[in-house]
Image 1 (cartoon, helix red, strand yellow):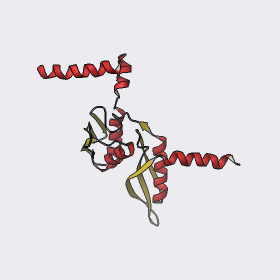
Image 2 (cartoon, one colour):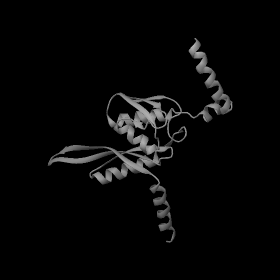
Image 3 (cartoon, one colour):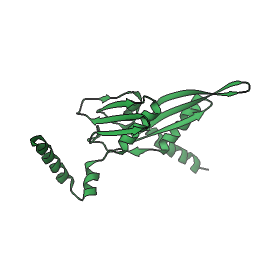
Image 4 (cartoon, one colour):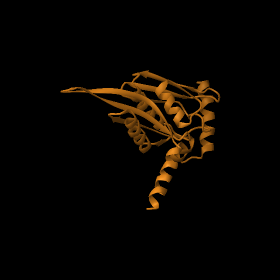
Length: 186
């Protein structure tokens, strides 16, 4: 019996490290014999502001229950995103889902988050401080969040690229400097 509260306390501590942002609520109606039955669908983004983020979708007859379901789904679907200096992306990246397309660009310190609503929620939950983002195509919040996650999954750190190529990070950074000069001459 003493273990149950301790397990609950550990879960609450783990959950308290996450920041959750409600991105969108949609009211849906089901037409039945007596009229309409209303339900709610919620889209929630959850992150620890240290490089982990996830999103979830929940549906229920009441708003708080839909939000709770979406938050639980988001916590189960967390991804880790490598950040440069803990504040921005390592490189520019594109993502898409359905008709929603996004372009994410690394930005110098002090730029802030320049992004639309659903993407802004993802970046704030992720703990990113400097990024420039543009959405193209669909403005549907579900497609934008999924396209943003598609782009973030494509993000690579120099460490992982160096490991894949069998190089040291310093060699990779040196090659990057050489490539920039050669491209200007040609």
